Image 1 (tube, helix red, strand yellow):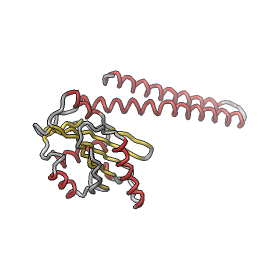
Image 2: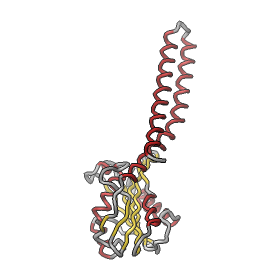
Image 3: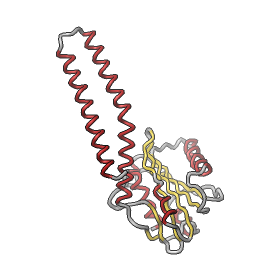
Length: 243
């Protein structure tokens, strides 16, 4: 779906919502302008409220989905080329750099190494609320970034913070794979990003691919646009660390 069609869908939902609200407001005006008894007015008002709640339940997920698709499409449209990496992400030098940046050394799971950092008030709007930052250095380029083992490792970090009664509402996750070069088809993996809200939690996930032959770092990013402040923070963090 191109951006024009998505924008048309957004306008359709906006007009529909305005129309529904207008009709309900007019209904309330009509109800309270008629010489009906209080019981009838209360019953009709309750009916209007029910209709409003049903409309909200119907439109809310659809509008959110379309807005997410629009943001992703815009990000892809404005996406820039690969960054030049100053460090090999699988090198000891880069690992030590992460430790110096206050990342906590995690467990080496074999196919990948995972590190984390708790951040709050770093100066970026995304860290006004506490953020858990996770960096996953994937040594096996064939390992799935969404594998159960990676999810288990993330859950373990969450459990450790919960045991310490450390709270956070934002997640920033960066996965980095490395090999000599990446085909155009393989580079599409960087499009598997996340900038989502799940209840009170805001999540941003960036996927990066490092090519050791030319030090190119492929990641979906744009200096002109970010789909959320959390995704903007994650990309700037990646650039600060490696590019």
